[in-house]
Amino acid sequence: MPVTQGHSPSDEAELRRLCSVLHLDAPVVRRFVADYLRLLHCRIDRIDHDLEIGDVPAAVVGLLSLSTSSSMVGAIGVADAAERLRLQAASGDLRAVADGQAKLVAQVELAEPRLARINTMVDQGASR
Image (tube, rainbow, N blue to C red; front, side, top):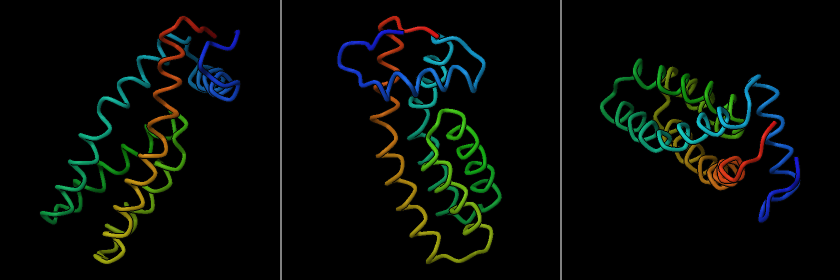
């Protein structure tokens, strides 16, 4: 797969890795990454809302789902932060939860540009 203009070899390697790990071709990976990015802030907002109103079980389910899907798209920092926040929420440590929410948002901000580049690269016709 040639390097697509404006994308680094590491972006291309990440795309190949995602295709391999998910056992999918590039157009399907692009759709999965696009859906992940499209839903990401809604998911974070829902988790924040659930924590704010004290619905810990709903927050825990949302965090588990976010952690799993983040792992699948290679957003390991997001997955790890979501998992830590899930454990903090389940423990009831409100101070740790607030810190965990901030760390989760920071990891999302790091992951989004990389995933957007991969998504754009796949849009431009890169394949497995």
